[in-house]
Image 1 (cartoon, helix red, strand yellow):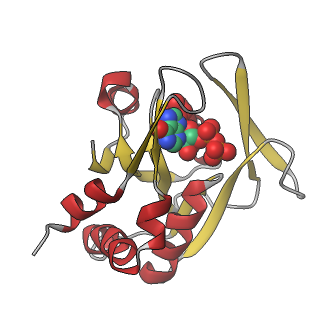
Image 2: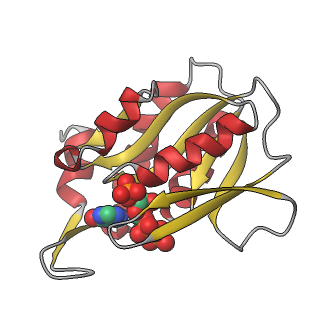
Length: 176
Ligand code: PRP
Ligand code: HPA
């Protein structure tokens, strides 16, 4: 019997030189496509958090939505999207973050979280950590208590998870 984490790791597809030369893209679509592997992935998260008080799951645009919404459903809590700038229709807060070239921005609805709510922050992957940190700042500005930064893949050589933990936020990754 394959260990669920190993099954997920073995199913992630590595795409050399995408989206540009020298970058190896970690593609999670085969994990989502295989029902056994997708369930194994979600179950890893469910078993980790089923005994923790969680009020909401926040998922990061776009792949954080796929995993985050299923996890919210399984934990019987609500789901909140953290979206790329310009996509949310109601009043928003915005945080800018650094990309390799230039900057990007994420937004959240101002009424998405109430002060003191315990929120799990979910995305597919941590590279430089910029996206996860910006999302966590949005949640903190709304008074949320961010329980953990949750991802499928951490790329530790890029230093993102270390940076996030230096900011006082614990990181949980299924694989590295
Ligand atoms: C990817 C990934 C994370 C982020 C990680 O999304 O899904 O959200 O990058 O990188 P970081 O740790 O260096 O911030 P991307 O920005 O490519 O957007 P997408 O979901 O629209 O593809
Ligand atoms: N996969 C998905 N998102 C990413 C990656 C990757 O390999 N690197 C930076 N963001």
